[in-house]
Length: 119
Length: 84
Length: 239
View 1 (tube, rainbow over the protein chains, first blue to last red):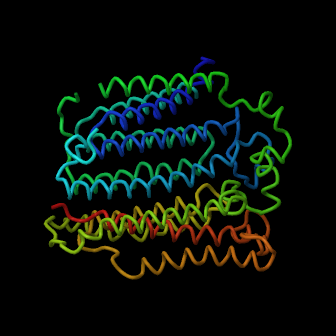
View 2: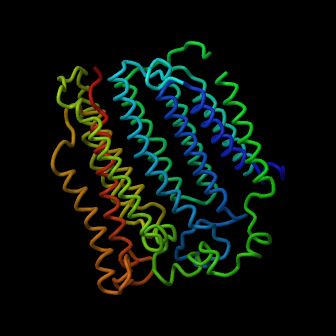
View 3: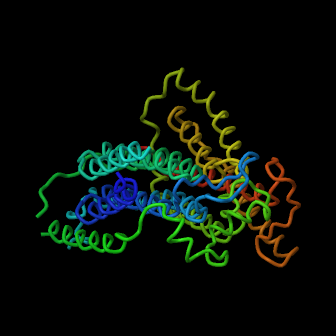
């Protein structure tokens, strides 16, 4: 149980990163590749927030009732992840628009059939 | 509480594997939304309510819609030839 | 072959990750980390958490970090968002000219009316989230995303009604300019970019936190209009 409680979040985020990397490397379909990038982004965000966590910590928000900063989790990774999520969706939309243009031009999304991209 | 979080992480990993596995891109996108939803609940348990709100509204909502618009303008099924 | 090479690479990456993080344990703050990083100069998170309330009078420390302490990062982030939206519009522009009339059948009356009824409520929720960003969880980014999901509902439910108007462009540019203007006024008044120059008020009141609510409202408009524009550009008809 102590193994679970100290490592399960790391296991989750690194599994997401590795699965996303596998999809990016292996799958030939462009939209599938973008799905892999999305999975990797979620894993990295989860990792950053996990690093900032403290045992039995409280959320970094003060209220009238709770005004002492002891035991508060680290607010900096949360702020970074907050902006990273919004950037992620914008970049994702840009990548998908490129995929749409590729489909218009070549009539397929399969990277093996697009001659200019074959390896 | 750690048991519930373990359950969430396991569901998230299974959904990610499903997103990698499905040949129907629409199914893969829905699995991706499930990953984001589970990640959002985990963010809440990690005491990050701001990030949980952002992930739930953007990751599980808008990202899915954008993917579905893109699939609508291209093709739905992955071509299923054997690699190599 | 390709799959084999990829699996090998994945194995190497996984091994590297395992070797790097096998010593790190989850949530360790008390002994191992805080022992080395007790000084506020080193541990930024501790410093922001302990001093943020009295310096900015904003209850939400994450909002304080996003808008004030790390406000320059947020300005760059908004710029990235803008460039991505402009790039998407430019890439998809050629399709727009040969736009065919809509093939999809219109939604039923119940869906149409329900969407029109829900749309202002969603906008109200988004505005609530970003106006109260310095007090409660939430803020400009989350509120902007909620506003954009309201536009998404209009696209899905009421065909033919969109936001292809000049209003979105005006809101987008004005909110970006408002962010820059507030930051530059801080530079002119107190000598540093994004200085919190307004009177801060008392903590936990709506009018508190100096410039933080202003900038968060600007970010909310910006994110909402950018994401709405992205949805507008992507949701064309299929061929």
